[in-house]
Length: 158
Image (cartoon, rainbow, N blue to C red; front, side, top):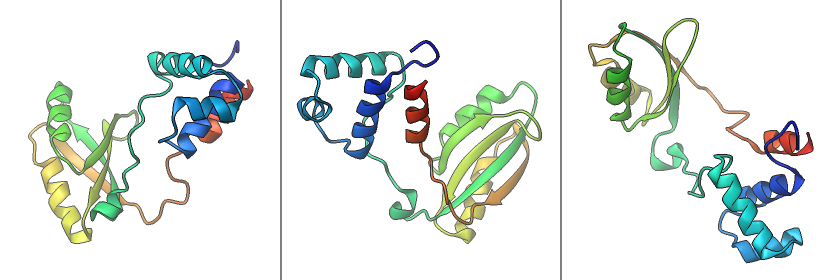
């Protein structure tokens, strides 16, 4: 484990929990063929080190009625970062916010009910004095959805 914060057992535990998030510790130990205490200790360590952040449900925005996904690159006024972050945190359709290098200062992933509704969301996002300009790109499809299991497998093998 010199190059990676996880080993093969950690990787197998993470993969099992990703496939079956409602599985219990006892069942994990049975399937992984290790003691229940080992699974619990590994899980506690993974959580305390921030490798595993939670066990909540995966929610699909499209199934909630928000099938349109877009990415907005925002240019903000100098010194307004904290205020812009607070503003964007209050917009429910903003799913993620990243500060970036290159063109723009922030990149956010937003969702909307339709292309027409996207205009309302963009107006809500940019309707703040600290945001100077926005460039938006609508996602057409998501052929590689957010995933971490290939990265977990690679890290566990190192």
